[in-house]
Structures are given as structure tokens and as C-alpha cells.
Image 1 (cartoon, rainbow, N blue to C red):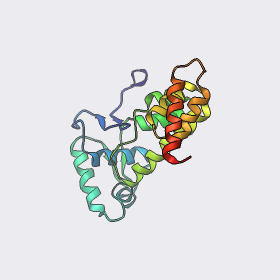
Image 2: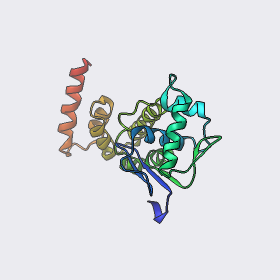
Image 3: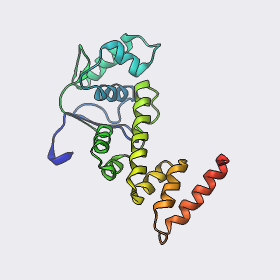
Length: 194
């Protein structure tokens, strides 16, 4: 919580599923988390068809979304309709990371990033946001020239050759991690035939 600020709903969806809310069971069902994530991404709201497409894909019926929204409301999550949106004060870790990156606060964003957005989710809008957030973070870290930030992200994105090459380039020659970075670069190049 930033500066003692109180929120009606807190979504910690990076690297897992954790909801802080008076009545919602923790951890909540992935489908509920997907609905809340998509609504958090669209504060102005979505109509039922757009929400259904974003969460369930093209083959689902809007009635499925409506039923899940009703269940979430019964759990005490304030959701307005026409358009559908989360009501009340919201904090979402994935939105905070995005905001920090926009402000150029790469280290803070990296500190908040605990893993992919809703790992395991196949909801179209969640997959799209997950990939966009990871690439934004990756590009910001690469451009930062900060060897610590590059090292931390390279450890998280262990198969990312470009991050390991950048870590090797930025780490001081006296840093013992250079040996590890060099070994990783060589292994990845060998594995990929580069």
C-alpha cells in the first residue's frame, strides 16, 4: 500500500494470484482473476460482448461472462454494468509496474515485478497484456544501462540471450557474476546455434 492509502480491491497478479478484498477467498479462481484483470485494464469499462471476447475468446457465450460477473458480485466485488467496470478504489501490481515504466523508474518497476501476469491464463486480453508488459520491462531494463537491473531480469528471463549479453557487457570486470553471465551466453548461443 502506497503512503497508507486504502483500496477497496488489491490485485497482485504478477507471478501468481492474490486478491485483497474483504470477502473474496484467497486465492481466487483463475477465471475471476482474469475478469478482474481485464476490467482493471479498462477503467472506462467494456460492454458484455467485448468483455466476453477479452476473457473467454471467440467461442464463448456472453451469458458465461454474465454468470461469472454475478458470482464475483456475490463475493462482494463492486462491479458496475453498462459498461462493465470495477467500482471503488483499485490497486493492481501490473498497472503499477506499467506506470513506473512510463515514469522511467525502471528499478522500482523491476522490484515490483514478481513474474508473469496471471501465469497459466490463456484469456486473450491477459496473454496480450502479459506479453506487452514483459517486453516493455525488458526494453526499459536493456536501455537503462543499469548492470544490477539487467542481471536481475536476466535471471528471471533465463533464456533471453540479449539480456545475458547485455549483463556481460555492463558488469564490471571485477564482478564475479561475469563468469556466470559468460557461461550463460555461451550455452544459449550453442543451444540456438548462434
